Length: 272
Ligand SMILES: [Zn+2]
Image 1 (cartoon, rainbow, N blue to C red):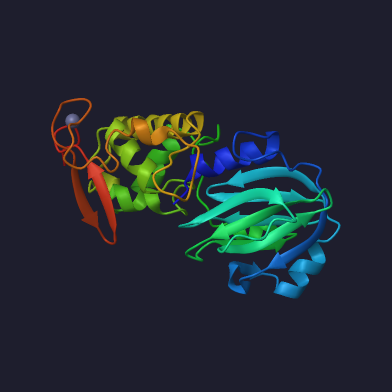
Image 2 (cartoon, rainbow, N blue to C red; image 1 turned 90 degrees about the vertical axis):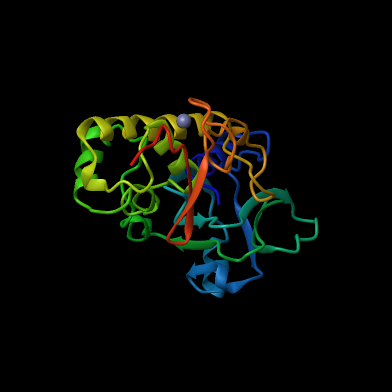
């Protein structure tokens, strides 16, 4: 599943142009196709298609794992979830098998939302804040400091790994970057959040920012066919490295299951 660094890489590409996507700034919508209605949360298919026509792409933003295509009147919010992907291609090409929504521009190009597993969602709205209001702080935001993380951790009594995945606690982390951050901070994924010391919280805060910044710098992680062009998968410390030696101490990386999700960690560096 694309996490903050992957969505940020897509944002930067769509904004400035990059290896996998051109800049779409200034493009004007000519028409839209909805091939799978349930990909749209709001509005309905007819209104979605009608309202998009004539709007111009004025900026590309991001909040947590949401990509925000700022249009002249509305914002188009896109959440890629498990398998969503965006491609820019020519309108005259036939749409891909798993294309769910295609936004066609006056310049003959289109932005296609491809989503094999159909969990991805789109919103077209003039009030994006209502959809984003439940999200926790943005990890790279200057306003989010180590003492804020400490306070938030102590407001809960939950295991660190599932808490870090909770988007209302902190926006943008998924399995990869939560595992990597906990390892870098030398904290066990099952540790209770209200038992973290101020020094632990500061290490975790630094680690979260470090792994996210490195992820963005390496264009995200490409671990399956969904997200392409990333290189961070070659630098994982623990994620999907079960049985391989820890890069710090040589101990074999372990995988445990917490709830429905797995966690990878070094039993020597990250003691409970
Ligand atoms: Zn280790």
